[in-house]
Image 1 (cartoon, one colour):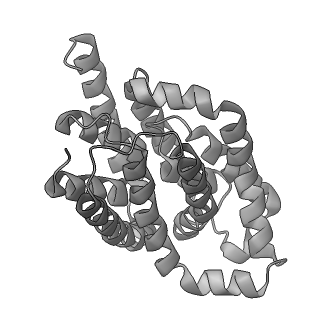
Image 2: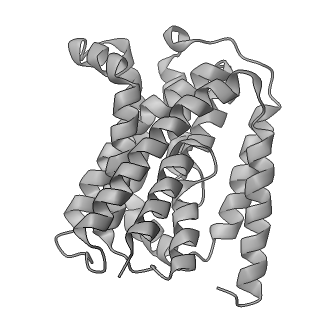
Amino acid sequence: MMSKLEAFVLGIIQGLTEFIPISSTGHLYLGRHVFGLDEAGLFLDTMLHVGTLLAVLVVYKDELIHIIKNPFGKRSSLLMIGTIPAVVVGLLLNDLFDSISKTGVTIGWEFLFTGFILWMADGVKKGAKKMDNITYGDALFIGTFQAAAIFPAVSRSGLTIAAGLFRNLDRETAAYFSFLLSIPTISGGIVLELGDLVSGNIEAVTLGSLIVATISSALCGYFAIVWMINFLKKRSLKVFAVYVWILGFTVLIFQLTGFF
C-alpha cells in the first residue's frame, strides 16, 4: 500500500518534471521503481495529471478566458493544429508505447535523446517571434515534436520548447506556448486514462494518498511553470541536457548490471 509520503514525493516528481524539460513519465517510472510501486494503478496516474492540469489552468486562466471568448480565433486554431500530431500518434500507437512504458527497456536511451535535442536547440540563433507571430506551420512543427514525447522518457516540454526555438520563437515564448499546448494534451491523456480505469488497476492507493498526490502535483506544477518561463529568459537549456544525459547513462548501466 502506498503511503502518503510516497504519494507526496510522486506528486512533487510529476509536478516539477511535467514542465521542467527532463521527462515526467521517465522520472515517475524511476520513482515508482525505487518505492516498489510499479503497480500503483491507473487512478494514481490520472490524479497526478489532474494536478498538473490544474496548475497550468491557473497560470493560463486569462489566456483560456480569451480563447473561450474567441473560439475561432488564431490562438484556438494554433492549439488545435499543434495538438493534431499527438492525437494521431496516440490513437494509432498508444498500445505499443504503453507496453514500452511499462517495461522501461528504452528509458535510458530516451533520456539521452532528450538531452541531445535540448543541447541542439540551445545552440540555435536567438529567435524573436512572440505569441502573435506564431504561424500555423510553427504550431504543426511544435506539435509534431510533441507527438514524439509519447515515448516515456522523452520530455514533452523539452521537445516542444526545443521545437519552438528551432522555429525562431524567442525563449520565453517557446516555453509559454509549450505549456499552453500542454492543456489539450494533458486533458486528452486524462480522458484516455479514465477510459482505461473501467478495466484498469486502482488498488494499492487510498483516497488520502490520491488527494496528497494531486495537491503536491498541482502546487509543484504551478511553481515549475512560473520558474521555467523566467529561467529561460536568460539561462541555458544545456544544464537540463547534461542532467538527463547523466541520468540516461546511469539507467543504462543499472539495466546492464541487472540492478533493475
